[in-house]
Length: 280
Image 1 (cartoon, rainbow, N blue to C red):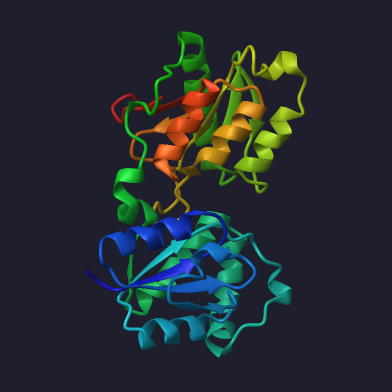
Image 2: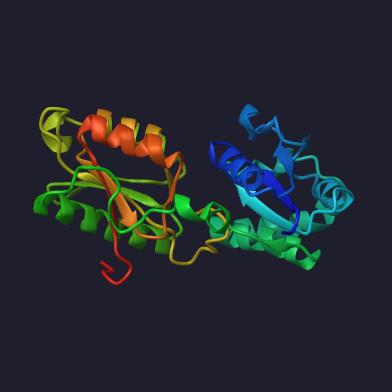
């Protein structure tokens, strides 16, 4: 297997990718993006580099004999005026800024093109994690009711329409009413926002209703920024009074699948995968 250069942003996903490489005996070197990467990736060989130090990143990957790269974890869009690029970064920055004006997905495609242009194979976190992808049907012991399934399907439809406009990957629907659409704040803060809505809109822990759906943006390169859920997502959805979470099979990464299943069962919530042939 090709040695992997893991470009690590924030969140739990980079550590899961590194751990899977470790399990498979695959060599991995972690480029921890300064200001974003969590301490959880510090136990693997690597170094911390600023996101605009593109030349430094490329040199490190070559020095460590990495042949493939994976971009994993969240990185908030920076204020480009405050970045301190190295020489390589400075030459690429105008094109990156121009791509950013066209949306996050154009920006990500531009960044992927840099690594591919330098001869690295680009791998998606979903390809590496494999079995951590959402499967069709119920993840745990709870199945959605017909009403909850209707909300889930509408939430997926809204998430995909939002994704077409490069807005976000998630949406929340209850009783057919759109309660929230994910934007730059991310899923956690969106669910916190839903939890602040009147209980008659969102339900309660005693009378749950509605669903969170996450779906990749139709225009995005799924090698990066694949939607992710985990135990914390389930906890926050529960605090918002929702009945469950879902997405398309093979199109949603589950962080710590056993803990996610146990959390959902404990809270009486569903995590549901819609089969690929049942597109909404």
